[in-house]
Image: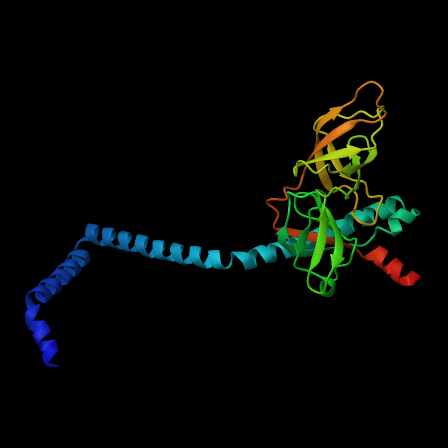
Length: 272
């Protein structure tokens, strides 16, 4: 108590000055319209700034959860869209066995936790495995296009072979004329592929879109693979030499969707 009294006596002049300043401020802001408006405006700016800073901090820390939620919603929307497209396709080609084996697609969201892009045999690892319904030979895509194919599966993780693997190829077709070829990576540029088996009589132009052919149970028809960047054809060649710009940028990849062909899976179970 003695210390408190000594403190008040020692700083009494300053405390009296501070009290008088507060009283004067209150009188000015309550009796003068302009000062009251200016004061409230400044206070609102401070409060708004505090709220914005708080929201930014909360948003930053919840960003990971939000990205995961968006990835799951994206996968669900893709599943629904593919179901609608397959129903229409089935109506047009009711007697096609191909349609029966490609009628039921599901997209399972996953996060990429590791990836290589500088090797001859590149791989990426995702945080979903057998307990999430992932199995070997399932296709993997993202919002840009084809990513790769699942090569090995553990309980909680899976290994994916991307397009940038020298032993990887995917059946695809030129969207403008439906001619079918396959991809090949030569191991030198992670942003480019070769399109093989396109005969010389086929018209190929720079900028042509290359999509999945739909002839295998791994990928539905029409998923983007890449765009023709260059094509060469010399006398004596039976096939075009075609270079593609890959749709997927593997050094920016974050979330993917694993494609589960439930119809094919059911056929396999029935045959066991």
